[in-house]
Image (cartoon, rainbow, N blue to C red; front, side):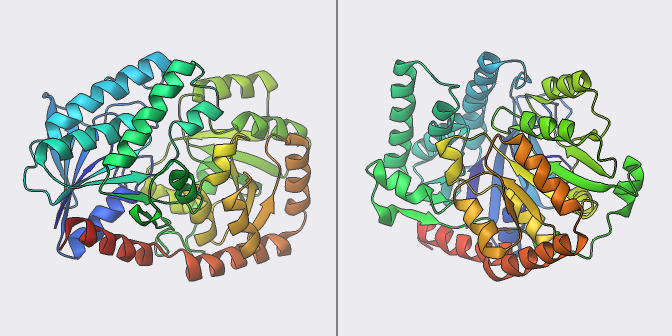
Length: 406
């Protein structure tokens, strides 16, 4: 098979960001198939240019994976207006890049942002190919819940685009068990939707990885490190984390380390400076190749989102990486991912936005090393049994064969 994927935020292991589609492309190549990626030339997390060179479309080969970098304005982090301008601009350049791949068996679009999924549908329509719609987060529901979208007319139009893509898709792939009933509630037949969780790479994130080099790099050899690694946007309620750190400023053994970047990064740094937090370090964005050592350097990991209904339906990828690495997670997210953590015994749930409770739980866990180690072992054991990415990629390959009818 040849699969054409449109993913604005695609990155390889050498860049910061979500590498699941790169891992998927490499897996497909191992099985004798090809996945061609249409991506933007700007990193979604940092807002920086990924490739040098002139041209509207720049072609790359990354470890044998063909990537077509389509032009996008580097204005992701300026404000919401310029963010939308970037997304819409990429939508048109992505269609142009997609039309260079005329022999694909089907086109796969992924959301969010919804604009790239619409570009994938347009490419599939023009190339007369099946369209597989991958739903990673629910758009526009998340944006409505966060009040990013408030205008009733815009909300109506956004839901219309969402329903249009659901209806036009040959098949829909979701990564959370809660997304399927949501989409069925939008009038889509259940048989048109397949749930496959992403899981994590058990060979990349393991308890045996040595994180001592990261600890030395940070100057935190003797500290109890609480790690947050991921995006720093409006959805990620890092301000609650900062308030918890403020409450723990006198607990000199506990230190918070934040790896990542995003739209709120500068504001978060400014707030940390205002609070004069002695126990918090912004470590910047790191490539995926470094993340196993980053997670291994931690004693406790943190996953946190705003308290909105939509986020109760999501499976944050970072939680599975924590579990695979044998690290306990303090989870400040309710819903389906809480069910995973509680079923595994691999962490503790804290109600969203409760910085007082978050600080108290971190203080208690840090004082009980045996408990931390036990939760980490239980998290790893549960993940091995239920969320091995190789198993999930094999399920995905079977779905691809059905869509391509091969």
